[in-house]
Image 1 (cartoon, rainbow, N blue to C red):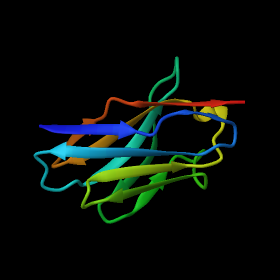
Image 2: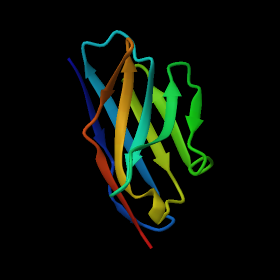
Image 3: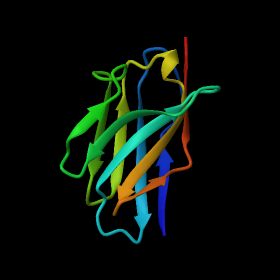
Length: 115
């Protein structure tokens, strides 16, 4: 059984910063990659960023240069550093971990950016 626990969501002003964390626990040999998705109210969930076990990263175009994803393999924890937040970044942020060919999701953490 694998569980993901996210933290760090909060309410901030336009231009603010937040750091999200996601830790995987359970029967895990290796984490292949981890990522973040988000879902704004009334919209479909969208992919935001991913990081693989070798440290390579990918970003949604609208967050590139403002967000930074990283992963601590030993702690099985992923981080999403978010700077220059905009109201359009608001939503529930979900962590996903790919482990031995399966995807595991966290429960989500709320990010609200007000203008």
